Image (cartoon, rainbow, N blue to C red; front, side, top):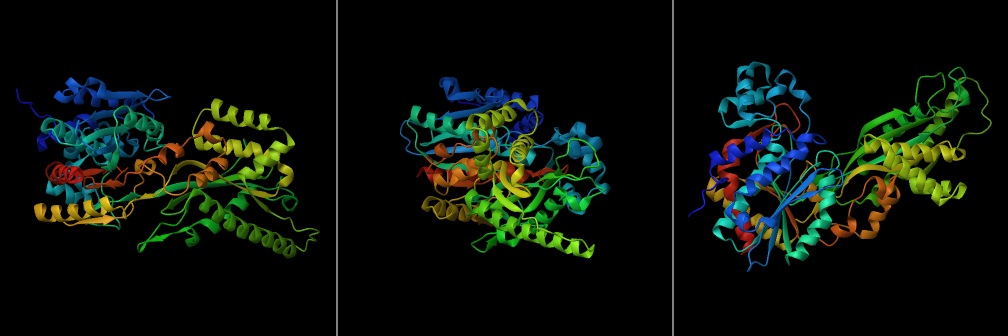
Length: 537
């Protein structure tokens, strides 16, 4: 009896997407835990998995969430494509009085049509075409997962001579814990089934390169993201005697002035320049109000990477901090003079890496004492792991306050290493055939871009740079592996190139998030099929 397809026609694809979007899988909620169980249920209806039930697994994570893998294996296949997606979504508070419809795409799209006059012009124009489906997760990125479900169903039914490993993970929108935890399992699966991973395929949606961009893209890599931080340690005093102290809040502002939009941190690759750094968080570390000036403060910065490693960034942060420190010292001297005050000694504001501060703390106490301090905060403190990182750096600075005034440089999670395989011969061949096929079949121009600019889990599908360079990240991360672990060693064992081919979407993480239906359900499935079959040959 011939199998009745579940995920092939445009209607079936749309229905499956709406089904999956209706599960509110916001990161770190119960819906995120339930979601992969529904995907497993749908995949088990495919005849291949009825015969091979053990090849679908919901792998439990340490925190009770799940990573799902589904393997289609052909006995004669030499190549294996890993199809990566994430199923978590950002929250829906921005939907306002339409919040109750955020996970119901068809109902939300109708509701938005009724209030089109309140929407931006570009959103109204899309609504009028009738070709766009709105809703949280429609484009970022449950459509990509549905595409992979369709591919694995068709490949298993038509006996494609290739291996396909569907991988869908939680937590991409926050810490990518799902992808980081599953990397060792991918190596285990490859050994168990004698697989050679030859391509990592992600299907995140296309992101515009400039405002109002109408071009269509695919990506041969993914931009990196790192979050350097700086703890400024000044000198406490009463607000009535400000010249007796150094305000750490002011110190952080001077440092941020040096780092914000600083082109020194940018990279240029193939004519494309990476965005400059920008401030993400800045605050003092006083526990409650008092008339003591804040003498400890912290700032975190967002920095996007293309070729640079964590070691490169830390050296650039040191240069910026040293420049800022000199400006602080000059400012102090100038203000003393303007108030006709005698300054006996200009305070030297020193710059330390976290690893240097930690070494000093160990010499004052012991390695055991410092390890217990780090672990107690990493294990016992509830809340955001960035806050835990800050707490550890703060406690270390208090242990070493005789080194102040100082700027302590460290890293806070997350870290997405940049990856780019545009020069790989297989990617060059696939890029050429993708562009040609899409133009000939649909009259649409696809453009290859070196880096997906939305940040993705492809960052963990390999390791560019020396493994030894990654130790610089771990040693300057307060709390280290206990708090936030990246499997650099396992990542270095992956040698397959990466590519991202996904749907056309707009306004990710906004209340107007939407998916272009004709491309998603009529053209993209054929493009992805062509990609897989070309890689197979």
